[in-house]
Amino acid sequence: MTDQMRFIDRRAALALGTSTLSAAGVLAVLGVATPRRAFAAGAPTQDVQLLNAAIALEHEGIAAYQIAAESGLLTPDVLKIGITFQGHHKQHRDDLASAVRRLGGQPVAAKALSAYATDLGAGSLKDQTGVLKLALKLERGAANAYLGLIPSLDQTDFHVLAARMAGDEAFHAATLGNALGEAIPQKALIFG
Amino acid sequence: MTPLRFASPAIAAVLMVCPPAAAASLLGDPHRGASLYETRCGACHSLDANRIGPSHRGVVGRRAGVVPGFAYTQALKASGLVWTPSNLDRWLTAPTSLVKGTAMGFRMPAAQDRADVIAYLASPAVAGAKRPAAGR
Image (tube, rainbow over the protein chains, first blue to last red):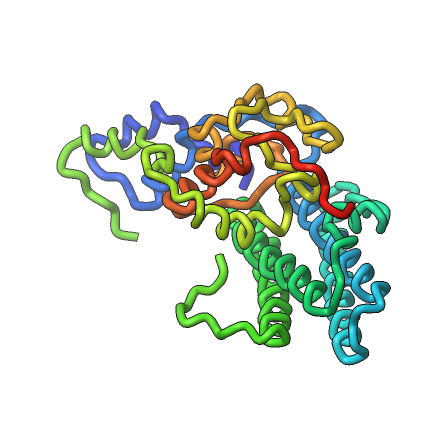
């Protein structure tokens, strides 16, 4: 369904309002209360823009684990886990890049590792605990980011993809939280 | 699906033109907002670094698309938006509805959460000039 097809002209909707209006109709009308700006000709589709932002997030995650691995601050067991998680992020990146290409877009490139190190304040990391705290912050944020992204994605396939990635990030966050001795949250709906 | 019947056409019309609950009318808690900012926004944003999204220090009252060194979408640069608390609320509610073509898709559905994050971004500790990078 195209954006144009989804757009319900408010005047037409008001004309329907004299008798009955389905719940779906109410939501559709409320959802377009703010006029949408049209895409410029040749501009990437909305999903390409959003998926590329997700690729940028994965690039940063891959870089963060690389910086951690090269820091010399991790014990061998923790390093092994970090490399495994980095592999997950590489799979996410590749799946997202495939999706962008299917839509006719160009996947966004990664920045230099040194740029990520600066952005993430890696120079202030002094021990394994600091590295794990940074990783937990990024993974927890990524789980929330994917959950918050789902309603903005157009295609159902991408809803599922983002939800699966949120699950992976939540798994990473839980593992890291456990390694740091964090208490298990008492309330449900931990993410989102 | 069973259709929703409204007792009055006027009620239906009001529902159609009212936006979702706006955080702008709620009192925000900047301390809770700081925690929310880290867990909900922190995957992509920092106060002083351009990451997946632009840096946020001083964002309240700033024009959209002007942080130096960040590669904005054409859509956001051309939006003409100023990040007032009201516009930030609309943005966090549904960014792709406010600016079609933006790269930001993250939505924050709870009005109180939005109010708290906006209060944090508007707080003196965040709204001021960029701090010198410590140790970097």
